[in-house]
Amino acid sequence: MNFDTLFVNPAGRTGRGEFIGALITLLAAFAFYYFLVPGRNSQWVQLVFLFPAVVLHARRLHDMGRAAWLLIVPAALIVINAWLYLYNPGAASKGIVTAAAVVVSAAFIVWGLVGKGQAEANRFGKAAA
Image (tube, rainbow, N blue to C red; front, side, top):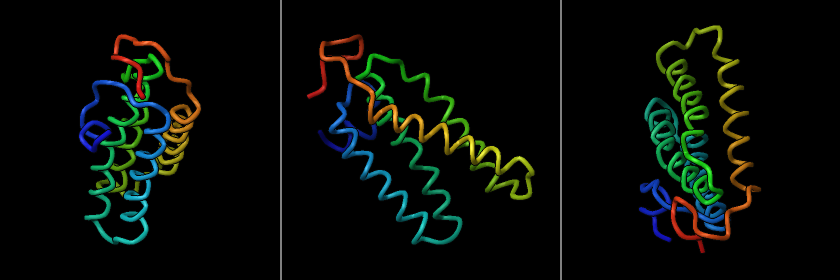
């Protein structure tokens, strides 16, 4: 599977094996910017990583027979958290939103890792290889 399929095109399905490899790549790139690149540019790049992460998880949910609309919850929490850090750094609720974003996002990652894909074709396409 190529880069465009995994990180850009949300249509279709991604099996667990491909999901794990793509997730490791995405998390490694995110960790690089989080730990090694300082400043506001790093924060913006981390926020841009939200798009390929949502696409990757949407394809994995499709493989499990689920709609990707469920990803609105973790994506919204991450965007709210980013807004609080970038534009309202003194917000009192920042810690709660951060914790909620981390817990919900981690739950979706674990779900993608342990969730069983459908062996037969479903409304999102043929079974992932």
